[in-house]
Length: 358
Image (cartoon, rainbow, N blue to C red; front, side, top):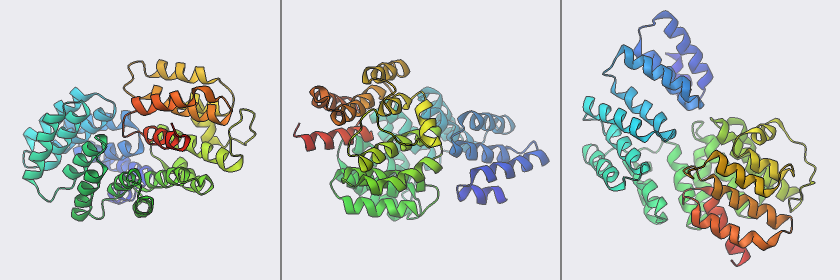
């Protein structure tokens, strides 16, 4: 089927069109609904993906892979109980498939049930020693514990098992960057950029690395690529945010609120987003920093998304650039203390504090 070929190349719209035709010819095909749901998920259209996964399961209630992939959508929405219920069903239906166990473990870890999650991940490794996913998950655990050397070691194993799985190169590159191995990080990001599936994330990290290395001008092109080709609207918004920061840093060396930069459509779209839109509004002098933190608390009242810590970091950068220096160090320290360790803002706050001697 052509749809699968399009999907593997990351051409989700063409894949969806092909699956539309397949479903029109056979409305009872659970496989076609599942495959189209996967394309929708990779396109960032969770609602359409869930509809197609639901229809696939209505047609074939014993389709274990569908439960697994629907669980990944639920997990991305932080609906951990629903995700674990689906993964329980997948494990029951296909107990010999290590991926189901590994994804259930990863979901339990995301829910903060780390020990139970690690038991599932280790069981997945015992079940299938050729599986790379458990190594990726263990790397994520080490990463959150700030043990980047152990994370790199796990990702080395994942790559040795599946050298053509592209996203692992991006993950290893971030871990290397945090170890101070900039050249190794850049090499991994460039390797990831060779694959269409991981290219937007790899280009985003290339741009961030250039920014951290004091070369924001060279970061602009890869960030522009991430703006154009990232799957989800929020991923595109964050790429546009960092592209704007790189532009301002490269073009002016500071961020005065009166700065005059022509705003391309992706930047305007990012500025209209519920988050990080208020940050973009601040950078263009349309709202004051206090409004950014208020918006973060309104959009994320429980703090699970980390918007408040992001607001602290970006406000610190804005204050530093506009000579409002009194609160810069406290804001950066608060961002470092409250941002999840896998956030780019955690890394950025630590680097900025080091530059400022804070």
